[in-house]
Image (cartoon, rainbow, N blue to C red; front, side, top):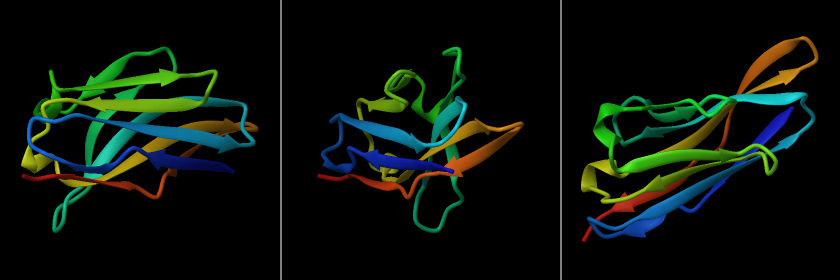
Length: 119
């Protein structure tokens, strides 16, 4: 099993910055892709950014140039640096990770952290 715990959410004014962190714990051989998704009220969960185990990254068009995903494989942590935040970035942000356990690879979600962008 893998547990993902997010932190770093909060209330910020438009144009501000936040840094989200997600720490993985549990028993697994390796962490593969990790990423961030978000879900705004009344909307479907959507991809924000992902990072492969090797560090390749992928971003939603709406956050390119403003958000940066990074990871520390030793600390088993993935980060999301969010700059120039906009009201439309308001959502619950979820961490995701694929982990290899035994001969299988399984996907996990964190419980989410609220990000609110408002003046």
